[in-house]
Length: 137
Image (cartoon, rainbow, N blue to C red; front, side, top):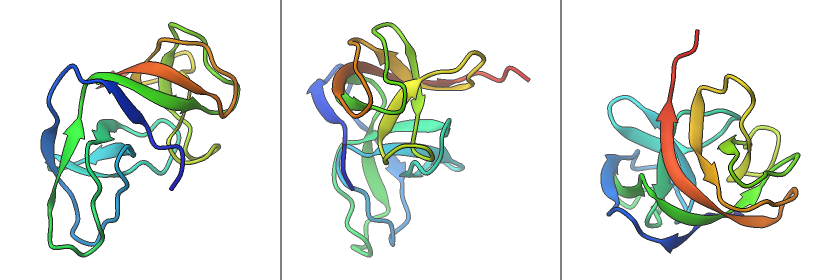
């Protein structure tokens, strides 16, 4: 996988989440959340984001826990349309490359964080990781 997020400033320690033994997850991957407190690599636009993988997970290594950052300042990569400093961010996996981030649409429900710099498509930029979900419907 390419375009993994890179931790720049650690503001909170990572926390353990459950992960499937057969999953392969590169360090820095944006992770989606499922029940119960389980993560996998994001696969679509506007996924519910758990956080960012703090470590690599090798497929079928017997591990079923992975450390996940829920807060911090990261270097990420802009998806289609780029981002502007201050934009709320969503995943852009379905329409862009894995781990790309895009400016959130009006009424977006699953926010990854906030852009701290402006960037064009595929450019790197700093962002604040702060995943949250609101139910607007």
